[in-house]
Image 1 (cartoon, helix red, strand yellow):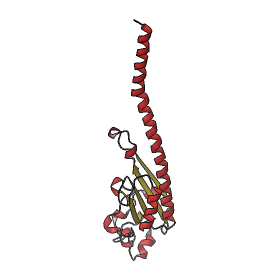
Image 2: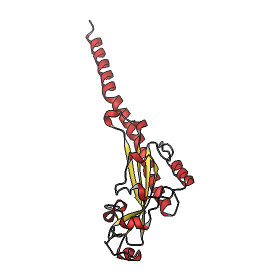
Image 3: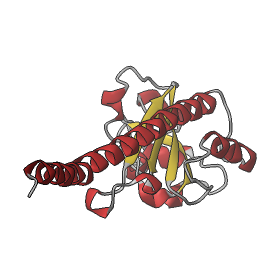
Image 4: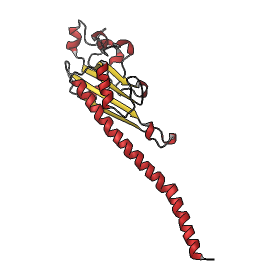
Length: 209
């Protein structure tokens, strides 16, 4: 018997086991992490661009502008109403005493229950809305115009679902007559997953102008 030959055989088995059980998963994990890091950079860029355009008056209720946003998100498997991602666009303002009085109402009284609160005045959702909800709340669909996304004054002054809960702490200086334009984006990447046991990798981003 050749003891050195046996040692070489044992070393070969150890190398195969180490490669199969350690190096291959490590390599796959590195590739998946790298690909999803690229996706994260893309999502951050798309979200920032969407908020920037929205703040500058691009009307994303128009189909042509929705298509433009989807072109920016190319490769993320998004459609206008479905797919692996969603973009939530919101216009937010602050309600003070003057806003209530301008509508012929008393601050905090009937019809102006949202006095001293930040509220949504518009909400547009592009993509798969079942994936994600805004961190600041979701206006009831009954008060959102299905064509334009606008919420009329009567509803954003009084309807509790129009409140952008917690937004005042995010932008504490927002005053009556000023508007914040926000984009929130969430994307899942099932094509770059390590399996169901690890869950689907997801990426989220938020931009406010």
